[in-house]
Image 1 (tube, rainbow, N blue to C red):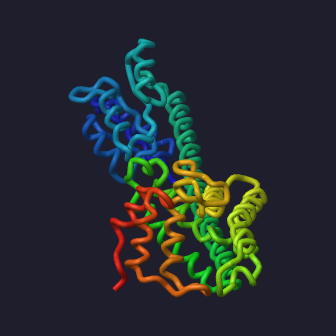
Image 2: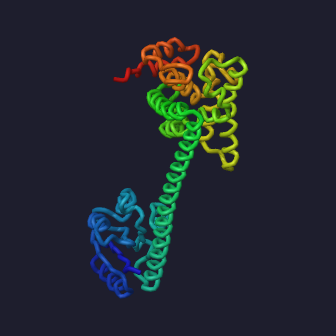
Image 3: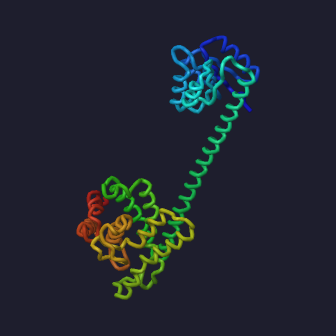
Length: 352
């Protein structure tokens, strides 16, 4: 165990001498200061004190003022302080303890009492330092494990996206592109009064992470419908529309299996279930309208349609960007949330 460093502070040289001899003989490293300003300077110099023995009654700056300054500085606020005083009034002792002193030693000094109280405060400080180190380690370990879990979640989502891609390569690419669109739209709307509470940096990250799962339900759609090069029949369209519920059900099963609510899965479930709802209530699967559609699904609704318009499909060629923009604009207030549409249009640019 390293040698403990004590800082003794007293304006009387004889008191410094008595304490210095006693504490050095007990095996401590001792530094002495004869004024409050000097003590404050020594408290921040190496070797930093493990404990300060501070006289209360000093000219220029008394012990209470020194203690206040020590506690106000993050670099010295955790150093324990024992007040040294010739005052016998209990009220003075209570005042000092209320100010943050760890203990009191009365003058004239009784060596056994001084050594016992110094030893006690040093042991308490070592215990506090150990707990602080443990807390720092635990906080770092928690942060590491959270980062690891986030990486696992991201890899799992991409694995599911790749699973969709094995069924329909264009679906896999669409999943990744819409993830980018949702993130950009969310960032643009982060300061909007209607979305500020929802679109925090944390929630934008969760949205970005969960967005690739929006079409995962298409894994459950038969190939003859999913990959059909022509128009779907009415019955086939009914089956195709089930992908929204299939996706949300699959995510809900995963959420249940996890044993605890996972925010990114809750958002993923919202997006998968309701990203085909329309602002005017004419969408599917539940015919939700306006604000009853979760913001996450409203963001994906626009991103999903825009990417579908500009992308190649087995049943159509990609649409020019300007034409796709006009269709999005025409859907403002009917298909899409007006404010989300405005954010899209305000930041729309044609690729060079």
